[in-house]
Length: 112
Length: 114
Image 1 (cartoon, each protein chain N blue to C red):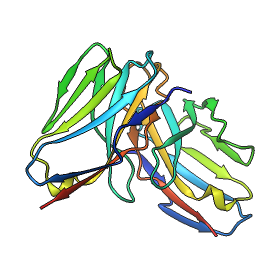
Image 2 (cartoon, rainbow over the protein chains, first blue to last red; image 1 turned 120 degrees about the vertical axis):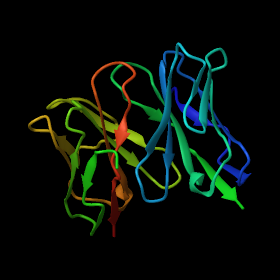
Image 3 (cartoon, one colour; image 1 turned 90 degrees about the vertical axis):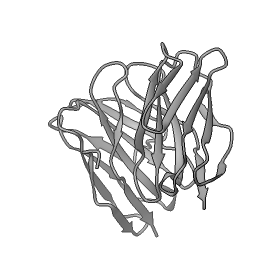
Image 4 (cartoon, rainbow over the protein chains, first blue to last red; image 1 turned 60 degrees about the horizontal axis):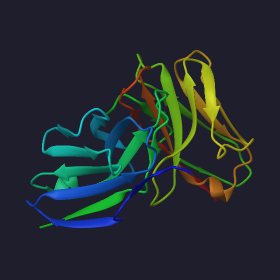
């Protein structure tokens, strides 16, 4: 079946550097995407979303890029901090019912 | 704190026992979702409600699982005759009805079946 997946299971980044987390999706009908951050023992925390009629959206220290042509999504974190260490998930909603599908996640490890 | 509340945070039970989890969504959200997450995996959809109506159930939801949202506010997820394979984090989420509405998660209930 169609699914959302991530390219790398673990990303190690030095404190202060920028992080880029990638995500591929396969459902061409998906029109809404969310990035979540999940710390150990906690539920996923909303970071930023993007609609399919956009190709870029910026938040505080985060930017999401959407390339519908190749069905690719990325999350950029500027000036990565120790508090950014977590697992990051992308999720897509293939319809208006909001039944989001998640990939396995990328573990981001911030080193001093 | 997203405003989605789940209880209990942790549940340890013996195989064969029944367990029930509760979720209180954000008050103005009429859609409520249950997901299950195992270690190292992303959340997997189980079921969802629009108000009190349960609209869809995943194949993951065997007949030992039942979910209710009797008054369209809080929801419960019950697992009967628990098995060790049921050990997971059970996540509840809610959102408003409509396109492109954000989905907010609770902190989850971590179930351990011994």
